Length: 367
Image (cartoon, helix red, strand yellow):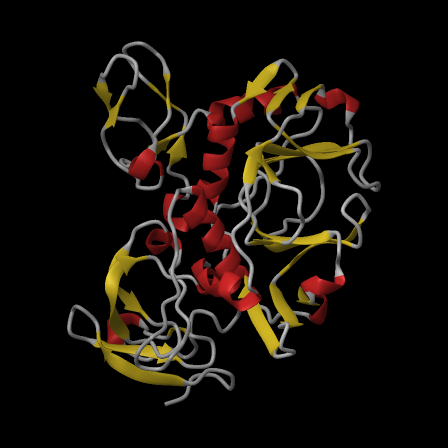
């Protein structure tokens, strides 16, 4: 059975309601329409193909200063007028203290090289692999390599499943369900160290502190929480904290481009944990619109959900100070509390520019 000229839609069993389910073997996406009918095209048929400029082939051994690769999402706060970027961010240097020869975000990265025995090796990272690895790792989950036993396709758990370990998986390759041997989260990035013969690197808190005023950077500022690199080959330890870009105008590179232990902007102090958690939350479509500024109605303390509640929307919240149980008001009954929402809104009130609104629902498979 065929959909449009690009899709190849086949039946892959039944849904839980007993109706047929269809899958596209070209785009690896659901192709089931209403009432269990085959769709004209799958859900991913309209995703824009990767342009050559959005793909990178990289041999880490050619950059003696080190290579670093991260999952990238837009800033949690952004008063610049630059484009939204998400995918795989790459730094590469010829010398450890030298300039970045590569400093960009790509939709796919192909790592190549050879072993000491001159055997060729290769590893490919997709934007979905990188972003969901970032979300899993920021919430404290280890991922493992899982392959579909029916077709051999590498499995990546997305959205809810990237932060909730489970045994039953839906293969994107063939559209069929399978069970793994253990409760886990799958991501092909788990095998990157084996593929490139390196051990996980060390992460240490940044030593720098920053105190700035937004008015001094009319080109805008951008704020991210740090996240551990997928691969890092530099000898220097990676730093954790809050990463800041600050621009003097719209055309020049950022005047400030560093990770800081402590950040104070217009007299407002940012908490790295709140910012880092919010960044991970913005990568998960199932939390879209549900991360809110929640305050205890009894003692008025800003409420910060931690642990599993930081990535699982829920109805009842318990104040960490006075133990009062309360519900939030608003569009959604089930929410997640993060005071970073209020803090960033206070920053926006002090800015010369209104911040860009970056839709949480960024990933192509969730459109």
